[in-house]
Amino acid sequence: MIIISLILAAFSRLLSPILGISTGQNFPPTLSAEEERLNFALFKKGDEEARQKLILHNLRLVSHIVRKYYSTSKNQEDLVSIGTIGLIKAVDTYNTDNGTRFATYASKCIQNEILMSFRSQKKHSSEVSIHETIDVDRDGNPLAYIDVISSDENVPLEIERKIMTDKAMKCIKTVLSLRERQIIIMRYGLCGTEELTQREIAERLGISRSYVSRIEKSALEKLKSAIDG
Image (cartoon, rainbow, N blue to C red):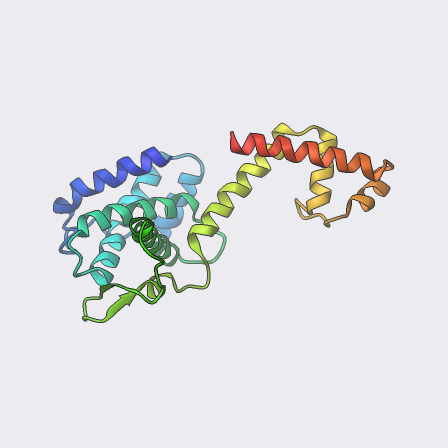
């Protein structure tokens, strides 16, 4: 997926002059709400063409953000490429059931992807203040890190959490034995169950607490190996 994302980002740089990314003109039209819902439904069923359509028809949003917040940047094409990676992540991780408009979610993903790029460039320099000016907007107002990251949720962390949670749950179902799976689910309150102590689990299953502890430890080691691998 990451390789595909990078290829699409590079492709977006080639499309920049054609699509008018620097001017905001000649973009594919934004999808209607109904078209957007339909294409997300098709994408969730594995339709790659629907995924590409969602990306292509939202490139206008990437351009808008770059032109609005980074109008003085000399590397706008690079920022468009970076922002496109954020857009791709947004398409791949958007939950149509959470009530948030896709444009709102995608905007945060795009801006956070650009922000992470700035952070990466600064990683060998001195500590960066969140109030440090990184650019100016089209009206000449200074734009600081805090202006970019201000939101009710940390999108990159939320994406990472979702990816890791999905991977962990898949491993629980496929790597662990029935008894290990049962204890891990009860121990950590997964699948809507109540979180229990080792002693409570032991009482429910009619086994010793030390046995529960050994099974839990073994199961966690299996999960760690599977997830890291």
